[in-house]
Length: 170
Image 1 (cartoon, helix red, strand yellow):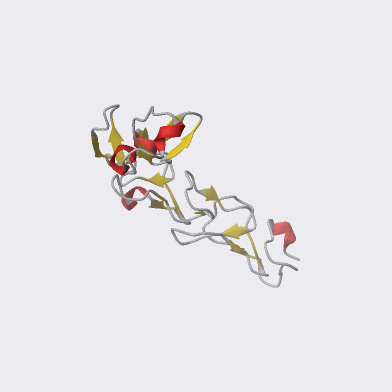
Image 2: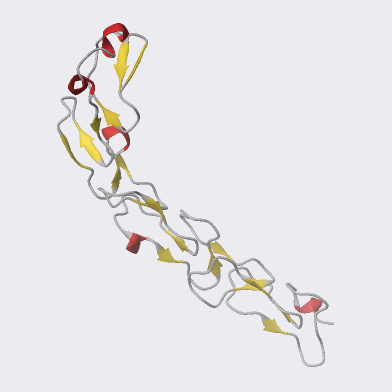
């Protein structure tokens, strides 16, 4: 607990009911200054606390919906869905809510709520990718969200990687 402005206040993540003035706050017996740890707890005004329910985040003893991209197991740390996955649900309770990005898409950051389609000139033929692969020399891809690059016609090639059109085959 900290005393300031004539009140004793608990640190973030702890809760207590203190109205003693700052002058006497430090002199009170320790048990009068104890703050209740409310991390992963839901508490009423009388500091009757229960475990934070799964699917919720409970900062400072108040339950809030778990946000998309985040998993809230309840009584343990919340965590972001890993790269290569996405979660667009609220109140996710475990890692099974983090689904792999489908082929032709990727997610390059933790906590994604959507997967991004591969750009033209790239492709992805595996699920759970953190990036799409550039089309190699001699191939191209004109569509977004592609799973493979097209080969140039026989006797033709591209002059660079990530070609986006048949016209790039010379």
